Image (cartoon, rainbow, N blue to C red):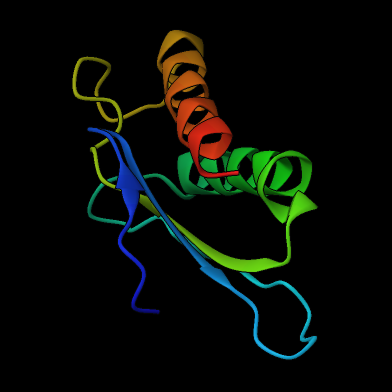
Length: 99
């Protein structure tokens, strides 16, 4: 994917138009280096998929969503509700700008 990302401090979203009628695909990059606990990585993946279905896949495009900021700096490596809400809001900003 050669597209430039729409990005902020937390997320990068790469979107590229489909060629010749393929199905839209979603790629997620939530690395263990940034979200240590599997529970938190899975939570972020579910959040990303939900927003991609609602916002980004209205258009015919492939999308890669990448986490750029580590999770749980102040909470011993755990993703808490307040931080999850912040990450969701930042991803929604990018989804609205991109799609």
